[in-house]
Structures are given as structure tokens and as C-alpha cells.
Image 1: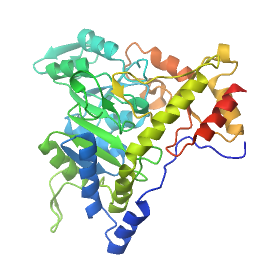
Image 2: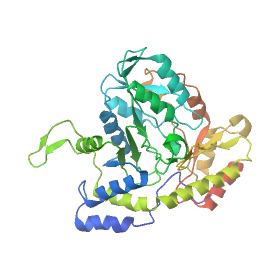
Image 3: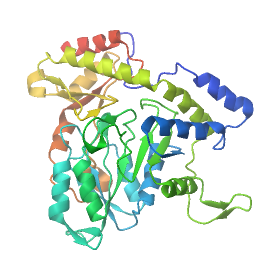
Image 4: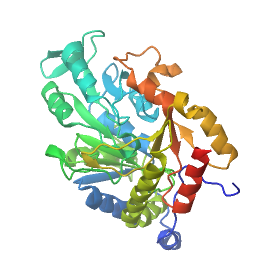
Length: 386
């Protein structure tokens, strides 16, 4: 194949040039400018969140959100092992310790095992839960909506409220995913917990080149998020700072790009769904291959298309298939190595992790750009059939 088909790249097809030029013409290009507040307002309207605070990237958003949730040095945070390493690193930034949970069938944190851990492996003292094995306070739960699949959080949210455990949602892959059932029906991922975080990295469903957003219903948390992300200034004229803050604010140019991208999101979501269905119909009759389905309790954004490869039946494992597709100019990627196996976190506690390792062993992500065409899907499937 002569045409290169990338894994996930942005589609710049709207008002991006116009809005960015406005920034350049006005010379408002840094973290102060009308597009930052406009982007925050647009995200609020789309997600239904009461407050949104723009950050320089999703990792920065998670770092600030965990701090706002009260996570501090010596605490523990429950987090899935099967996720990109960024949310785990933000726990470590605060001097806290990750405790790794297993994955369910949708690549998300396993709610049953997590509930079992809270029931059997923690003890309640006042309005705080403590890990029996370590004696540390379990300060937060950090679920990740992996590949845009909504985590099942209803029962976990109730138990966490009872035990004084804050929920900070990593919705960095989930823009456009809404729950359709239960008490969370019609709510966007990232709006269930105390705080939620989005990402606008270059491979996400919309991009600002690099950017993030903190979502919350609490005006005090929103104000403090903005305060911490802009160097904790008490007096900007006299350079007086009341806390240890960060240079985490999104720039006006990035926000302008985000505004233009968000205008196109409904169309992007349609393309994502249509291409998922094309892949699914074409792959279902290929022996040894399966396209992972999203959970039925949500309208998921289909950010990543997740192929599962049963090597004994298909004849190739995921890495052999990756190499063959790469040779044919098709970019794919395996899922992340589980974090409890990563060098910085091998000594951290993990709880009954089994399915995450199985998913790691069989998963390959297929091309999923918002500009992916049906002909390109057909070309990829043709290579899968060879």
C-alpha cells in the first residue's frame, strides 16, 4: 500500500485558521485572551459541567485535580493498572502511592474488584478509609475512561461517598461520551466525581495541540484550580503569591484551535461511530479477530478502535500483525504495559490483577482518525484478511 494510514491524527477543517489569525492579529497569544474563556464556556455547555478550567495539558489537569481533592504525601489513590502512565505519575507528583486495580471487559477499572478491595482490605476510621496492609489513608479513586468507554461508577461513587474517598475522573480520552442509563443518565464522563479531567492532545478526538480541562460542580474548587494553574497569584501587580502554584494555563492560540475543533465535534463523533460499525461488520467473520465492543450503558465516543487478536486461531500475535501492517504503511499500536509492571511502580501494591494482563497480551489499536475514510477502513481490513 502506497498511502500511509496513521493511527490517530487531527482533522483541521473548520475555523481553525480564522480564529488563530484573530489571536495573531490582536497579539493576544499567551494565557490571557478571549478564546481561553470562550473555550471554557463552550466545554461547559457541551459537557453540562458547571465549571471548566483550561490547563496546558491533561496531565497538568489531573495533577491539580488530585491536589484539589485533598491527595497529599503518604496517601494512597486507587487507579487502574491498564492505562497510560500519566494519571499514575500525577499521584507520585504529590508524594502519594498508587494502588493498582484490575480491568473489566471494557478496559476500565474493574468495579467489582475495587468494591471488594474497599470492603475487605480497608478499615474505616471516622470519615476516612485506611489500607489494612499499609496503614495509609485511601484519599481518592482515579478511574480512567479508557478509549472513551464510560466506567461503571454508580456503586463505586456511593461507597466512596460513605468512606470519604474523593473521585477524580480521568476523562482525557472520553470527550463526547455520555451515560445513557441509571442515575448518571445524560451525564458526560468527567462530571460524576468531585472533579474530572479532559485532554486535547494531538491524538484526541479534538485537539488544541496540547491542552486539558478540569471539570467540577464546585465553584470553590474551580476558583482554586484557576488560582493554582496560574502560579497562585494573590497580587499580580506586586507579584505576591499565596501558595505553590504552577504554570499550567492554556494559551489563547491553543484555545482558539480548541474552539474551532469543538464546533466540529458532533460531526467527528458521527464519523467515529460509522467507522466503528464498518470495522465491526468487516472483522466479525475473520477467525481469531474481534473488535472490542463499548459498554451498552453509555453512548461512547469510539475514540480508539480496539482489536483483540487470538494468536492461536488467527495465526499471528499482535506484534506480528503490528509489524505486517507497519510494512504496509498502516500505523497501529499495542495497549499500554500495565503500570504495576512498569519499573517506577513495581513495588506498589496491586490487587488481584488478571484481566488487565490478558487484555494487554491481545490488544492492538487500529487507525481511528476523525478524517479516516471508508476506503481506508476497507484497506485496513483487507490487510487483516491476508
